[in-house]
Every structure is written in structure tokens, then in C-alpha cells.
Image (cartoon, rainbow, N blue to C red):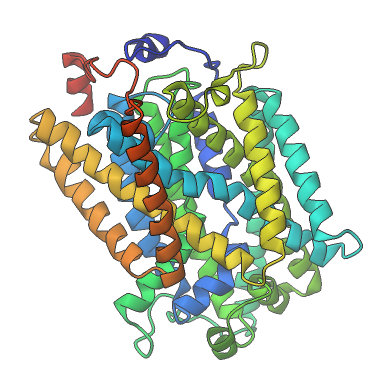
Amino acid sequence: MAGTEQIERFGYTQELRRSLTFTDLLVYGLIFMVPIAPFGIFGGVFQGSGGMVALAYAIGMVAMVFTALSYAQMVKAFPMAGSVYSYAGRGIAAPVGFLAGWVILLDYVLVPGLLYLIASVAMNSVVTQIPVWAWLVAFVVLNTVVNLLGIELTALVNKFMLLGELVVLAIFLVIGVVALAQGKGRGFSWEPVYNSGTFSWSLIFGAVSIAVLSFLGFDGISMLAEEHKGEARQIGRSMVAALLLAGVLFIVQTWIAALLVPDPDKLIADGDPGGTAFYDASRVGGGAWLATLTAVATAVAWGFANSLVAQVATSRLLYAMARDRQLPKFLARISPRHKVPTNATFVVAAVSLGLGLYMWSRDDGITLLSTLVNFGAMTAFLALHVSVFWHYVVRGGSRDWLRHLIFPLAGFLILLYVVINAKVAAQMLGFTWLGIGVVILVILYATGRRPQLSGQTATAETPTEKAQAND
């Protein structure tokens, strides 16, 4: 069934331009996750894991693989923009979808601001003459212009940015391995994977709640379901492929960096308030030039490449909720020429700029934003796993226990443990946000605007599609 026919079967009109291939989706996911993402938050994960940073990333990858498999199942049933909002709303019930969309907004709306802030701080450390606020404005304006010019330009820019990030990563890995072989750092050790002296499950999962920030973005691929021109199953496959590729890169680079940290005990005790731990490790391995290269690469990757695709995903989420009248209608406006949600893109830019400037004024701005983003994503992913079970097993009578029960249950339990072990501040603010969503939902019901999804009575899958879901 063609993509346009799929979306129209659920009561929507094809408004976005279908031009993306499987490769475009894979590149998009990798860029969103950022192959060098650990550069910017390495110190926090190292401290949180007691030095077992590679283990934290390995567990995070496993948890996200289960989540990607659940996404793959739901995107085949509901091949449309909106991600967890659409899947929970159609797989369980519209009110559940609203709350899932509201919770994941905590991730999607905040993440561009976080990316801009980290990048601006990194660039200011290299070019001190330009203040952080000026870098913030420059990154926001540049990305907004690129996104408004159409998804094809964004996809092209993504490919060039991905190539650049992989080159920088390759340079670090080669120089790091050579440095360890020459006796720099601590030499080869299994401690970044397992340290019997500091290991505990609560410690590791607390670090995982930070490390998963690097993985967030693979799910953004699902936001492009209405701009992908291939079969729906390719969306799920691209998510799993991007996640596995990024996970391997994360584990390898953090393992090497952990062995090059100049003072591990001090980093564990005092943390990394300046966010320079990875650059300090790079300096041990290759000198000041490598430290500068990794810092600049982080700034460009987070502030331009990653935030570019984050703005795309966030604007699509706002668009999906607005066309269902669960957010203001003006957010659903599509540019007739470029086929992108113009107003939603402008709103994301404005919120990102304001949020970035505010958090810059706080000493704990980056840490606070990171934990909030992660909490919102993890909570929404819990709803995703439930929607797989509810849609396929409870409603559809599926007996594919592996993909529709065991995988979702495993992903649910791992993420639940991560949420439980998240920082208390993140839990309090996250549940406060969820509470606000519940209040809004009550108001919608009281005013006769209960959440309803277009074509809600449409059958989610034809017999043919059900057969494909079991392939």
C-alpha cells in the first residue's frame, strides 16, 4: 500500500513531501543521536557510573534496542507522524496518546535548547571573544533557515555532517589506541566495563539515565513516516540499524576515553561541572590540538547537526498534535512551497532560544536540562511498550509472544528501573509536567473537547499488513 494511501486511510491528507529513502532515515537517526555524542556528557556519565562508562552505554543500548523494536511494530500499524503520541493514542486510546505526547514534549521541546546551550558553551571555550548568547542566536537562526527551506536540504546537510563527525571520531580512536599502546593514560583495562570495587546495579542504572541522552534521536526517525517514500517496515529497520551502529561507536569511544582520563578519582569525586572531561582525556592522548578538535566537533555536531534534526522532529510532533486539535491549530500550517510545518518550526526556534538563554544563566542549567529531557523520553517509551502489547495482543489477539509481549516487557522493565533510579529533581519536575498534562486533559473533557484522532474508527491493519507484521 502506498504511503499516501496509508495516511489517507486514517483520515489525514498527505501534506508533507514524500522524498526520503532508507539511507536518508539512517543518516537522520545517526545525526540525531550524534556519533560523537558522548564527547559532551562523558564526565557526567563517568562520575555517575563510578568509572564504568562503557557498561552504562552498553546497557543503555540494550534498553533502546528493545524500544526500537517496539517502535518498529507500531510504525507498521500506524505509519504516520507523531511517534508515541500517535502510537499510544491509536494503539490504546486517544487520551493515553495525549498524555504520551505531552510527556514526550518534555523531551522534544527541551532537547533543541539543550543542544544549542552545550554547543554554545563549547564554542565560547574555543572563541572566547564571542559570548555564549551570541553563539546561541547564531545556531538557532542558521538551523531555522535550513529547516524552512525543506526536508531535502536538511537530508543533504545531514550526510555531510555525518561524514565530518565520523572523520573526527576516527582520528580520536586511532590516536587514543596508539597513545594507550605507548603507555599513556592507564593502559588497557576492563574497568570501564566492570569494576568490582564500585559496581552496583543502582549506581549503573543511575548513570544509564544520563547515558541514554546520547541515544535519544533514533525515535525521531518515526516522525518522518509521512515524508518517507518506501515501505513502512523500512522505518523500523532504519531505527534499529542506526541504534546499533551508534551504540557500538559510543561504547568504543567512551572505553578509550575512560582509560585516558588524567585523574579518574577526582572526576568521580568532583564531577565535571565545566563539561571538559572528554577534551581533557583527548589532551592526554594527542595533545592540545586533539582537545580543541574534539571540542569544536562537539559544538558543531550538537549546535548545528543534532539540533537541526531535533528541530525537525519537534516541529512534526507539534504538527501532528495540532492537526488533531490537541494543540493550537496554527501549529498545523504547512508551507505550500517547501511542504514543512512553518509555524511549528518558528515556535521550536523561539522556545529553544529562550530556554537556552535562561539555562545559560543557571549553574546547573545543562545538568537540569539533560535529566528533564531523559525523564520525558523514558516515560513516553514506557507508554510505547504498553501500546505494542495492547494493540497487538489485547486487541488483535496476536500470538507472536516474542515481538508483542517479551520484547516490550523487557524494554518496559529496564526503562522503569532507569526512571526509578533517575535523579530526584528530574523525577519531581517530570511528574509535575505529567500532572499538568492530566489537568489539561481534564479541562479538555470538561469543555467538550475530549481527545479524538482523525479516522479513529479506521482499521489499523488489513489482513495483508497483519501478515507482514509477522514477517
